[in-house]
Image (cartoon, rainbow, N blue to C red):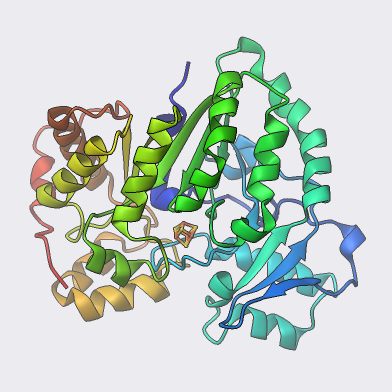
Amino acid sequence: MRQAAASVPLAAGRPAPKSSSAASSGSGSRTRGNPLPLLDQRARGARFYSHLVRSVLNTPESTGIGCWSFNPYVGCEFGCTYCYARFAHRYVLERARDTGRVSSAEFAKLRGPNGWEGFEHQIFVKDRSALLEALDRDLPRLLSRNVSGDGETLLIGSSTDPYQPAERRFEITKAALERLLREHGLTIGIITKSSLICRDTELLAALSQRHRVLVNVSLISTDPALIKLLEARSPAPHVRLRTLRRLTQCGVTAGVLVAPILPGITDSLENLRLLLEAAKAHGACFAHPSPLRLYPAVRPLLLPVIQQRFPSLAARYREAYHGLGRAPKEYHAALVRRFERIAQVIGIPTQSEPRAAAGVERQLNLWPEQRP
Ligand code: SF4
């Protein structure tokens, strides 16, 4: 059986779809001309819009992430500076504009003054009935590929957090998981930073009887100040660690997704050791690392933070990621090697990665740790 948490690239928590059609998950022509229905609005900012879909499961081919994936929401209130799912929000808005559902002026307003704020404050909620109908249509395609019975992987939360605050009110993720209770034999991966997943521990435990369920609690550091700097509204590290413990105590297989690991900021031996020790103490069944991906959508948010708070690293980031979205291969290999060595000492299983080439560990020394 394949390792769900380990066999898919889980960078920043979230692999990037190849195309806009994959990202928008099939908002269809039947929505042409209808305005965006506003579902709810918070006193301080966030607005939630209904998003009709005809198809919800992204195929591995459409995203390039190596497994099926599904996202109940487009946009995420946690607002991490390193999040590269912002592009998916833009695609949904562009489609709404192109199908006449929003005017050009509304489009600009919904995107936000700098073009990225909308991702955190204008959240698209997949319509529950449409989503369940779409799952009925899409699941047979996924299940038909599962002929070997080795657990075709479905990753929930590949682009946005399925247990972000909106889920408390709309329960779209819960509805999808309940639908999956009628199937069996899949490997279901879930990525989240949120303690709200504890609401569904019984459901996850029941699901684990029918599928292989792996919950990835996403955490890059145990340092609360650093988390506050890089993740605008995410739960504090201790809350996520408590979530990990609660899940494992309830019989759900859960571990930590350490992504993105930021060169020179969170890739130090000390940060990784403290994080993996804390994960182990809270029952983590596995740990998975992934280095930063500096895609175009991420640069305008993250690079200014690095320039301001880690000025000695700014030029190195620009140089190392020049023309690249992914981390340089040698750095990636050295990082994985470091991570696996620490995890082995602490006693947490990790994905087996190709061994780093001899000498590439030195590459990490080019990124001395910086404190803000
Ligand atoms: S929690 Fe939300 S904002 Fe942060 S990386 Fe995940 S999807 Fe992006």
